[in-house]
Length: 570
Image 1: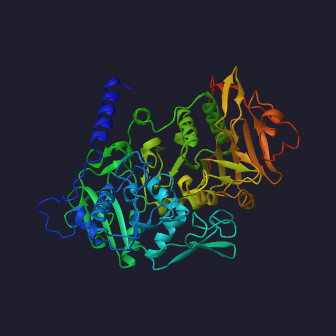
Image 2 (image 1 turned 135 degrees about the horizontal axis):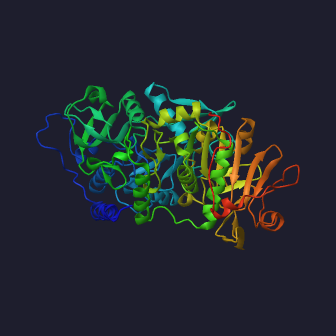
Image 3 (image 1 turned 120 degrees about the horizontal axis):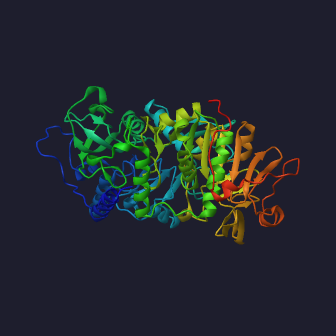
């Protein structure tokens, strides 16, 4: 990457950080006769007390920050709107690090009930939940998007197998309330299924690149569109309103209209709208747009450099790199060229990087929950977007596609147990430590092969010495007799005929009818000393009693090369 390119990104980030709190809640372009165009301050006056509001976006993508700021400003000035029910699907907070996220609304009295798929990043809401000042519900992201479609049809619930046997199942855990007894579950058991519900959406809020003067909305040059369409149609079907913020006004283009003007009630022109984290929509990055054909190597280097400057992605050591190589190698053994693949955050992103660097990404169709299909999933602060996406659709459409075609999902883990269950939703006690199930219930229900990737222990010290793994200091076991919360039910997956693998620093387990079977072990690992005695989870060895050792190239990276073991296309 050239020095001039690095300097450009450094200036880009510095300028963003110097101006990221800048806003004008009273701005409305002069000369517009269409009453749909108004200031943010005026638009949020439409939201009444105790309304049900749905906001769109995921992570840094398509944030509706101008509305978050305007709602908070109105509440601070007038005490209204108050006691709102707020619904989100993807993560919309910033862990207190960046202004203009959903966290702006985390003050007592403003939001009474929060329903979301991924909760961890909205720290102000979690704090209110911890203090008993907010009722918080967790939901499966895919089912949330399907409920939006249902509301647009005039229906109030759906039946699904997703989530059966997990925290969302009232027979197993609380159902949707994060705190037991605080709120009524939005899931109930109905035979072999769960029935999911959401309150009727009255206000849909979303960020789009452009509008024309008639009020038609366009998503050209967007990095993703998440639930913009379905939430808007649901709100209108329920007699509610749709509030949009756009970066600019463009000439009408009939064939490109995403949402017609008659479905829109308020349009705020915010020249500072972002395409994705740090990138103004008016100066969008082409790499994230549908049909882009930029140089992938250059784009990856740009994003990696930006993430390193922002300190978003952790620096991986030799032990974690070996784990990622092991998972990537497993992927090439169990998957086929032409497969549809979903990648989670964290270590799974490292697996994706290796698949790309190994030249195999061209044989894979990546799927992102935000609605992005094809291309190479973006990392770090840009997660949810992709480089050179083939198609950008809504989250509901991508989840439907997953149920039809998803072959493999590669995900992280917090805990695993002897039943093959996974916890990714609960880091510790109380709402303040809550993560949420995210898209896992739907990805687990739809994928044929699941690969979980995570460290063997928390806070352990390990190193690679002469091509072997050495555990210097044991940590807290992550593979336990029983997970703290079941986000993924291993036995349900087995019954459905799925392949489930667990990649850790010490080796690979596969879920079988006999239990968690150790199918590969890292060189240097003594099974009795480093696994049996340090792991409270019961596991089994292959029936032969012999556990193959991971090859040295995977451990050291020297001579490591990825290639498909099964070259027949799926």
